Image: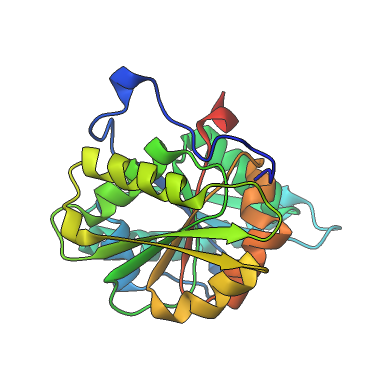
Length: 258
């Protein structure tokens, strides 16, 4: 995200900003041949969205992808189908893909664009999911974020904390941004008693998010105008995913798809 943005949020045209426009689509990249998996509780949490499971395997630079496909395709397909069954058990059919790649980042970015993903999951272990946090540090696609959070929490008892973070020396009105996202979630039909808001100051926002990650079950972060590559695997978000004890959902900006 850019630190000098004067507008703390992005919104859809007025006639598109009310109610959830369509079920969000979540891309779930999993390094299947390395034993990565998705817990039943996380699958159940994501089940209200349309889910695409991407089973990928990163190859040594000298290994041709065609050779790896011939050697590992059956194992990878079987592992992806096992993951898909976890989502089906939660009541949602899923789309599956398998990719052998020399560059994880570019492959995930490419598939996210191809399937029109609303968000991409960076998995971490998690138990029961009740409390979601949305750290807001700058420009966010409020409508898209609200579509996702509203869909995942609709009809349940889970709560979301909209956490505005003001960084020293950065011109960003966290109170205004948090209030706009709260109103947008209310427009999507999420009850007020499921939404909590707070604003704090932090000299190191990423460290603050990591430090508090144990208080929540899932972190939802906006891409904030960055490219998908930067948003998913750039220094800041990757530091959150690696340091946090909760899964991270990165909401993609609509501009990325255009």
